[in-house]
Picture (cartoon, rainbow over the protein chains, first blue to last red):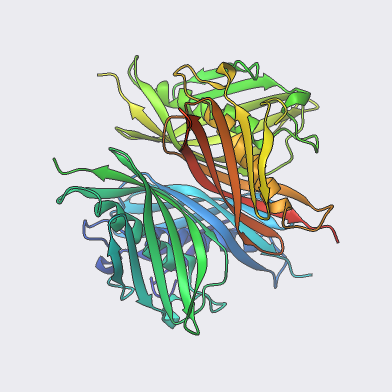
Length: 122
Length: 122
Length: 122
Length: 122
């Protein structure tokens, strides 16, 4: 996240957003933000969203994630969102989404799911 | 890819590997390479693997990808591999895998699939 | 769907639900509805949800689907829902969800995404 | 599985195949085997493949599965395969594949991954 200049821009119980300014270094040859950059933001957001519901001192590991790329990612700011849809004892299932801001309007570019393994502090 | 210092390290028809030296900037707070970095390498590899089977001048777009994280990603070199399993007229389905080199031995850290949309040069 | 005794129970533009009475034949050894039955309902729902937005005479093909199983599937009625989140020219991305009715209350058991290929009638 | 007339046709450590005769009841309006039938076979296969590596008396639960549909599913026999790629203490990651036999030749129709939660008998 430091590498991307990203920071947590929203933090509620079970919902986290992480934002970064877009940079030319994030872009592919075609001028769109690389899918991996979007995945970095959404994966971090899903992890923090899960952590926000666990006891302090707990830890999380990504089991898997899956993203559909639904629109070209262009814009001046990027943000990834993770929202916990189902928290079990050991497994958290999150909805993830990446958006870009274009001319002041947020547009969804990638959407999917992430499974997170919870190591609860006991 | 430039941002990661990555380069194509293997290129065969339908199979591409992309490698990068590991750096502390790629790592999360726990010392493992961030899932998004692995996704960046494998996504690029899947795109190039598909392109390698299309007519020159064709283009590709990621429809979706999915990665399971199967081992902690530590090591001095990272590589992502994309292998086309099924090439249709418009859709390519690739197996993707990310490995890290530890003490000279390659270890699989992430494995999954990617669906690529093909814009064939006609 | 005939085999499952399933029928369309909701049909709006971009949103379809398909329901079936639960039967012991749908259940695994542990008494939960088999994941494949839930996938059958949600896959059909995603296909019809996409068709509902296409010109009459169009056709659809599943490219891929992905389901997280978030609660044990028990109850007297099952339903699968498909909702189009993004319709492109050729690709539709749907949110899919399976629910079961327990003591009169609907509970989400599986949730995920499906990518549908659109063959538009021209 | 009983409903599909399916049976285990191969059982090795970490690799299970489940087969069923194709029936018209499995088919969609277009004459292809429904994606949900293929998912039923592969999901069962992944569960048994994982069980084959666990202590007797252990149990498994599907966390999630993902399938790409790579060819139309037609033929006289169907089989689903589950192969464990990585077995952790609690999580098993399997490769899954569904094939149909056409004119005596096996053809891959669906391919993907499944994450299985292991409840080890202790």
